[in-house]
Image (cartoon, rainbow, N blue to C red; front, side, top):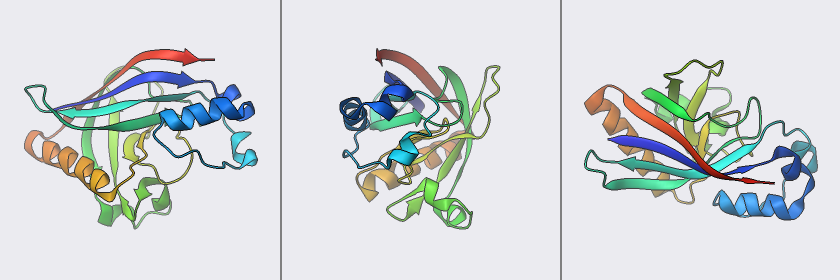
Length: 180
C-alpha cells in the first residue's frame, strides 16, 4: 500500500487574508464550498496553504482512494516535501474523548493518524485527519470530506493497511503552481 499527498497549489497567506477572489479560488481548489470566513480569523493567518490530492494505492499502483486535501495556514505552515511514516491512527471512540475533538471530527466521525518525518525537521505533532470545520491547519494533512462514506473509507483503508503492515510510508510531494 502506498499513501501520498501531492501538493499542486500553494496559496499565499497574505493574499488569502486580503483578496476575496483569491480566497474563493483557494476554497474551490480545496474542494470546499466557499464559506463566509470571519475576517478576525483571516487576519490571524500566518503561513501559506498547500492544496492537493491525497492518494492511497495498492502495491500494484491501483488507486483505492483519492480525495482533495490541504495543509497549512497556521503555525509553521504546510507539510514539507519528503517521506513520513504513519504508525498509528486514533479511532473515533478515542477522538471523542479529547478536549479538541471537533478539530478532527466531521459528520460526527473523527480520527487522527499521527505522521512522523523520516528526515531532519523541527516539525512535530503532525497528522492526517478529517476537516473539523476549523479553517486551515498547523501542518496536518486535512480532508474536507463531503460524505460520511468517504470519511469512513479513508479511515478504514489506512487502519487495515496499518494492521497488515505495522506502519505505512507516507510521501508528500510538492509539484505546484505558486498562486500569487
